[in-house]
Length: 90
Image (cartoon, rainbow, N blue to C red; front, side, top):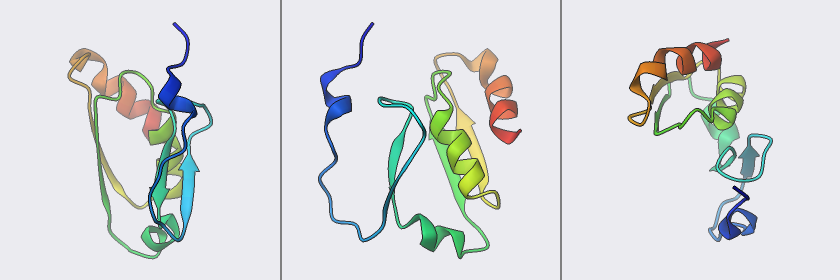
C-alpha cells in the first residue's frame, strides 16, 4: 500500500509559525501553528483520536511539549490503546 496523493500536498493556511512534527510523510506527521506559543503556557491538553498504531506525531508532540496533558483514543484497536499511550509517554 503506497502513499496517497494528498500526502504530498502542502497545506494552505495562514500561520506565522508553522512546524511539521513527525519524521515521515503521510499520516504520521502533522502541521502545527504557533508551537512556540504553546511552549510558553504552563497548561495545555492534547486529544488524539484514531491514532491507528501510528504515534509518530504524538511522540514528537510529547517531546516538544512535555508539560502537556495527553489523551489518546484508538477506537479501531481499543485493546492496544494502553500500549500506545505507554510508548508515547516513554
